Length: 116
Length: 115
Image (tube, rainbow over all chains, first blue to last red; front, side):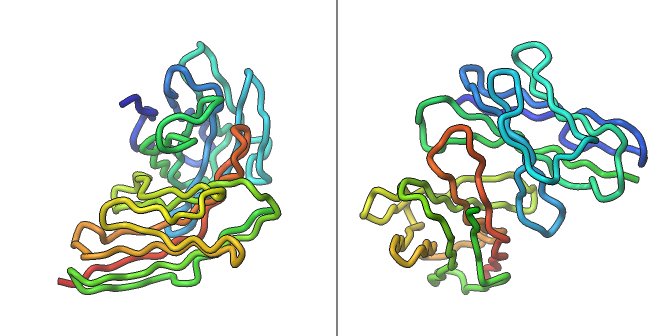
């Protein structure tokens, strides 16, 4: 079964540094999402992306965040100047235009981001 | 805005017994989906079960079943014959049946299974 792949599984970065989290969505999917889960808290929506532009974003997704689909296969989340509170698990998800399979959004296994 | 509430931060159950996790949600939509996700210590998000709002029949998946009460906006998960491997965080999630829209997750219930 096709999967959403996220790399790296764990990223450790110094505060103030830029970090890029990578995702390879399922190949025929058209909608892409990033979610964040701070340890011990619920999963929160960050941003959705369709047709090479942001379609929705939450209030969490401020100017230090950006997303890109640079080469038609990868979907990246960049955090420009990381803060301690950016430490979290980041999940990528993708979906097709029409319903297929057992879930409308397929989640990757997440990238654990630790800011020192 | 849609919200999802899980009123039980923690639950425990004896192995082989049955436990029910509660979830309520708020929406003005008539068509939507509800999900239960399991998150083990590895923190992967594993789909347990889903329910389409237009279906009156409650979804079942092996030992997992739901009690979906649309009018009450309630969506509880019943785990029968609990196993040690069921211990995890369980998140209830809402999705408004629109492929541009995001999931809305509840705060989670931590389930412990006692041997």
